[in-house]
Length: 230
Length: 320
Image 1 (tube, rainbow over the protein chains, first blue to last red):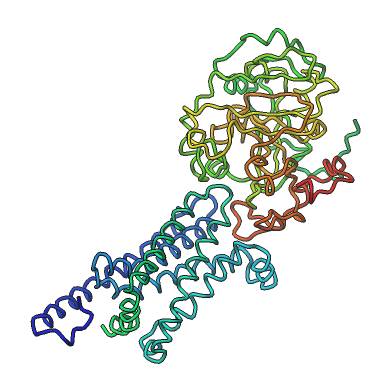
Image 2 (image 1 turned 120 degrees about the vertical axis):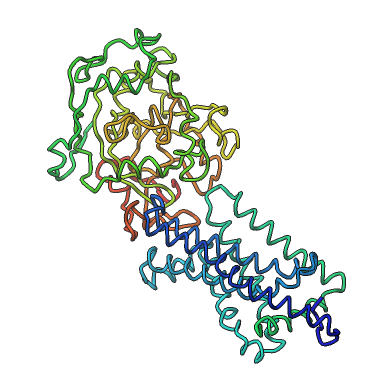
């Protein structure tokens, strides 16, 4: 709808202004919403509500939210295509950065409480344990994405930015595999994540297959810059 | 059988910790209303050293040389963080759904290769000849967390001797209650039920192996495996089967539930061993519940002095 505002008339322009206004108002709400799991975690830590094994609780909750927000980030484009919620793209970077934020908390818990900065032990763990390897890959892949999420990097990288940010798919796959490999027998929950991820990736492939891929990629390259400008 | 004493006896093992209470009331509470039913007569009197029940006296809970003096986990911790898949997969599920289960009346079927008659014995029949002790044991879960639990129970070997297993009884097989109407995990079929565990006869006869009926001087709560469960402190927690309804003396090695579920990850022996990792995670460290940082896991969970001999010459990496 707002793909090419330049070609619109004055009426479209004012509509655009209204959208911008709504987004500036909604953005803080989305921001605080994404922060709620962290605030709850902080509150529980402060009031002793983390349960009998608090470190495990922190690890699980930060890991869950990293994965959930990563899937939310990946759901933005399909939702735009199918439901026409184009305004959503304005929040994509925020979702992605919050996913990274929870992944950092998740990894820090592992670093500090599981291994207390023992690098040799961590290297051994990452190399030996399949589920740790997968989780570590998922986390490391998010770092360049978070770093290049700024307006400046988007401009500097141009089309390469889009190519680079396709790493998010690999990161999400690694995240889900990490979850699947660590559970004892209760694969129900990780399988839900796997199903959602498969659906999201499947939809993208379907879009491309139907020849709409070019349009998606085209907007993808421009959108982040626009959203960042606002 | 030669029973070696632990090399040093700690002060806490000499001084009774704290628990004084009426043993008769304990047994009655544990066995509920189910008193004096069939089976009591068949068993007769136990051999010397064991008290005949019920007793009038207020007895003191016998302390044990096998108890550890490490910091005990709180009652709250022990009763709210459990793996008991019959109640669900989450650690909080057993406590959450504990009330679904009725443990009165309770009986235990004892059968197999033994000289005593196979029968359903009431909990009172099972418990009455035995003197309850306090055993403060480390409990190491296969998931790499651990606790210290002050169990109330008695050596399994004392019960086994009462039933006089024959020479064909190479293993003891245990079963948990199968009652899908009360166990939502059984309705969900999250594992193959009834839950089955087993021990080699020498493991079952080891003085460390106990049948537990209480924690912290109180009868077991449902989430901890009421009314009677096994505790084998040198093996991963899943061997310590809960809410037992059947004890069977068998010739062949029983197929225990976790081994059936994932054979390459969970074996029959399941001895705590920091050298032999779970295929997907390390067993070298553990998180003691209540501590922030992890600690090293000990061979046989620190009970090697009492149990290592049983596994002499065995390849523990293959017999995981």
